[in-house]
Length: 197
Ligand SMILES: Nc1ncnc2c1ncn2[C@@H]1O[C@H](COP(=O)(O)OP(=O)(O)OP(=O)(O)O)[C@@H](O)[C@H]1O
Ligand SMILES: [Mg+2]
Image (cartoon, rainbow, N blue to C red):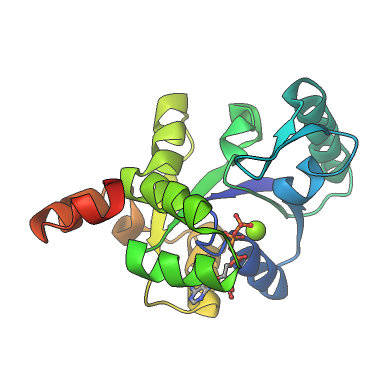
């Protein structure tokens, strides 16, 4: 079984793309966010940041057990998706796809999701700084890491791009990490102040 990890800032389309991939190939999906906010693992709700605080000491072993169980089902693929999917240990990672989104478009998507202003700013800053990418770089894993710019690409096309790389062994040269850089783009446009105050 090949494990496909999908990461990216909230709103980049991880859940939508994972679902679309499951229409194209035989795979199960583990959505870490949905599991993490269940009563079993969230021991506190941070009202100010509107975020659940997860007890990773019990959450991670639970996820690993779940991956091991799915492995027994002899499925060809498993997708683990979340903006914190970097918690997955290297031995369970075969491919990493980090979805990226232009800050202006991300703003629209998060507004549509009814995120409040503070939460939108926090997430857009994380996207500009490439936090999700950095977490995986720091892990120094052997598995290939790809970045897909979803800004002007529909969900189906993003899903097909991932399937091509994973199933058809396309080397994904155009999607190797390091090609998406909002920081440089905004710096050139003299717009950094707009996002970092
Ligand atoms: N490629 C895309 N083009 C246009 N809209 C998109 C695209 N991908 C996702 N969206 C839209 O953006 C919104 C967020 O998508 P989605 O919930 O899949 O993101 P997510 O990364 O799973 O977010 P979260 O981390 O909060 O779970 C949805 O309204 C979805 O329809
Ligand atoms: Mg999601």
